[in-house]
Image (cartoon, rainbow over all chains, first blue to last red; front, side):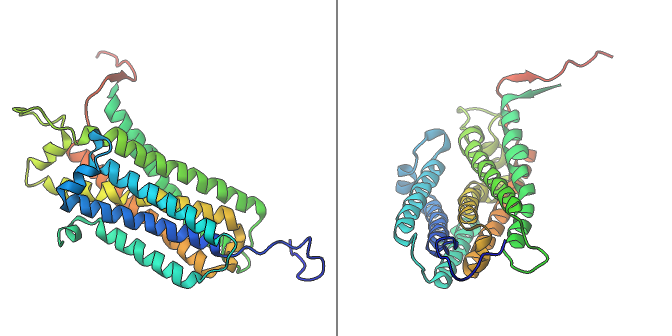
Length: 116
Length: 190
């Protein structure tokens, strides 16, 4: 259904700003990147590995994933709160998010981790 | 015909949640693309939009179910350490793979990659579902967001594919075994 572009503003749909979407996208990339960084750190440092054992049968994977999920959700909450009704620089934000996602995929690849 | 509880959980995790997610992924990518581009004749209806929202939410449930069962149900059986002096490693898949130079790569590359990359799937698809539910067809007016949403959906497909491939191969060379035996049917004696 086509909506009129003029006249009665009370019936016109409210245009959504891009802030909420950008917040979700950036937060997802922060979550993925945190997961990759923690996976890398737990592989390289015995101390980090030991700290990240939240559930012994699963080992450090439990801490890596739990911490990454918490950081993702926390970041998402903060960004959503700040950007929900704002128009943000979506081009720059999505470029950063996609770069972080690409780096995350790369950082979980064992031969890449072995380079450090 | 019988199956062990551990084999059943592996089936639920891989063939149930994992494969269903992979199958759903290509459909979601196509529908997301179709519904968020403005070119006629692919003008969508509110019903189609609602259906995609339900479809994406189902994928979110599948993705979280797959990683949670994988990490907290099956992985502990996979990485269990055998008691000292154990020679039969068939109940200890990780150690079984690491015991031979011809199979060690399935653990050191396959499982090490799979156990982390798989977690990108629920993070990505949760975001994709949230953004689509929030914006719906209006996403076609936010080209940058739409491109990022499609990219994350594609990345979740790739990550799920990597996890699925290595999961299947690892289970082929060192299957998770043990637990109670469930009798599925009684065979007839010949």
